[in-house]
Image (cartoon, rainbow, N blue to C red; front, side):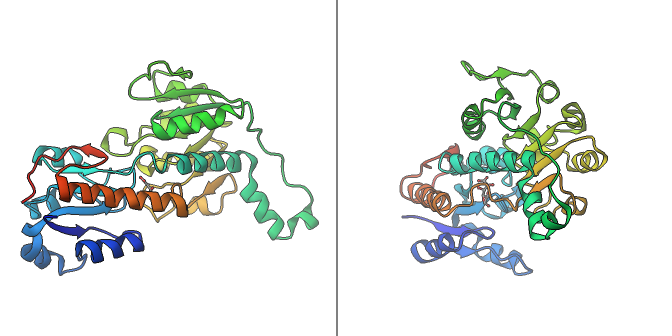
Length: 320
Ligand code: 8YV
């Protein structure tokens, strides 16, 4: 095996431990020692392991002149400057497929919780209000509702498959129409939102989808509409979302992702028409273990053969 491995940002503890023990990986310092560390060790680094929390920007790439691969723990890699990596011949990998089921399960759980208000009802019981105030307000039926999916990729398709069992009427918007899809294609996010009860965001993050769900889309979803987001906070105009949820412009929202995680807009913390999750979409023991294994496989494949197992960008820079 050739090369020096650098961990960039926090990783699952067992993954970080394996990187250190099997690959003698160093961790990029975050404090004032960072510049000195890069000046001393930067040119030895051939592979980086990172995640959707941190990633590698163009500046860090410049400080790692022999970097050949950026291995991501997670399916999303919007924290890495993929265009710059491509220009430099640096490979990029992610962990697709292994987390599809859990993220789709999370979307369904959030959708049901948001429409049926289970979390709010649980708080009501715990506060002793069932006995003192009686029944909770009625909620919104899930089965048979019209659901629009933004991004019909692996995760969006797995969400759709699950919703079929709920006899939902499914439509989608995607950058390209999906050939032979059984679901109705809407030519824009606004048109999709205008025609559904629930909008589920399952698109990739990054510059290309920033605020794809803008104020216009949320207004089209309307006062009886619900938004579910298991993708990236950046895809939704969070300020518009908060305003519309507060003014009755939207019925509710179920959110696993936010613009500035772990910050959550304060106005949402006391709202009963939202369900808030701390980015747990893939967060099961089983799925995180599979993601960890696929991350290590990409790293080993790259260092041993120069190829990534699940490449988003193929590596072209030779390993020294
Ligand atoms: C990860 C995710 O927990 O895969 C993704 O894109 O958002 C999550 O599965 C996260 O990226 C790890 O930092």
